[in-house]
Length: 552
Image (cartoon, rainbow, N blue to C red; front, side, top):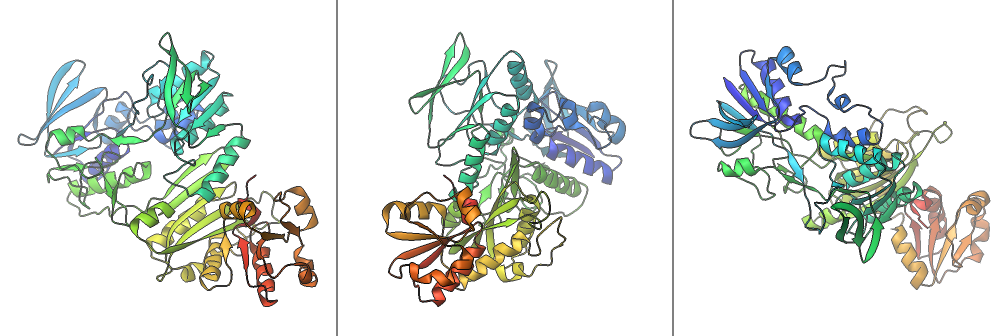
């Protein structure tokens, strides 16, 4: 059996490796246009930022072997052709035309795998082709950024505040560069995070010295002698020695389209659940294919290394006679911004509305381990819950605490179709170094159940800020004296009544005004709201998530 694989990234080489493990006699040839194969591109920002010291570290095994052409030939008997471009697929003859060292050749196949990945979108901005303007999609891009820094680059502008843009911001800041991030939407990570979560990330970036501009459109890139000098955005000039364009990706599906294979609505290659294309002899996987978003049934490009690896394994299994299935994704993603972890799964509010879900949301803050244990940090979670079924359909998490394991629990819960009632009783590991007695996930589920059952009415920080500006309300801060002095909501509408004094000071509060109760994370606010409701106060709300979500 002859197998040709176009693309030496995660999906292609995972497929190749799986085929070899199941079929010791197959002839496997991998064609890669670039210089490197099996390189963990997700690690490029950490290479630029100095956390990873050599580019080859990104293609090493756990035991230090570099996964290059020789490695694949010696260990797996797989022929890897780097700096070789596949130009055309002849489906009738089952051949692939390639160009290598300026010469054309042809490879025959019984099965073909297309794993051509994706390429960065370069928006039509004047000056975008200038020297010093780059993406961070390839090892060559990373080397170029480091070279510019070594030559004295001091100021950088990043166009786009998705996760690649934000990871790039950290990397360049680690090089002691002045960094400005420009995003045309009204918040950072706009395709992923809702406003309450995005503002926490934005403010943290600013604390780290990153200049963040949202609702700002790049108009042109100023050049001098062919080199970038500045970026003009919303009429203002921002000096730049380096410009990183991080405005999204586009699947590399051209060779498939040219061969007459079906292309999906997203521009990615159409595949079935077995990762077969419209030609039964041709499979495809990775960033070049579209996959199903399981919560809505819509198609999407899931450009994540874990997805590519899973799809590659399915391809390898099926080419060797298996019937493995890749059902789709629920959008689980995570990235790091300095010491902040940002993660999400399922739908955000925008996607929930577009899909027609009837839902409600809750915000919850909790320490990631027992509050008395050293190094405890807060995790801020947002749950999106479908009304009626009471299933969790989306979650977002940010903070310096252990967010990753919480989003993984929530991902599992969403895939299993768990309700908030079931999630409230999920049996998670507990010990003070790892979790509070009630894990943040369980706390968030309990908050959701309380909200569903009418035990409190919540508002978010944006709603409270608007009410403070436009309405005659009273904010009752029930934190301790020390907490209140350290950080507070600056408004004449704020009253400080510590929770332990609330019952004896009820007569100081007006029953004819809306009262919003505030505390550090929402727990004391919930207690206070129940006290007020019992005492006959009818219009009482709490700030969901507490001061952990407040921003100045």
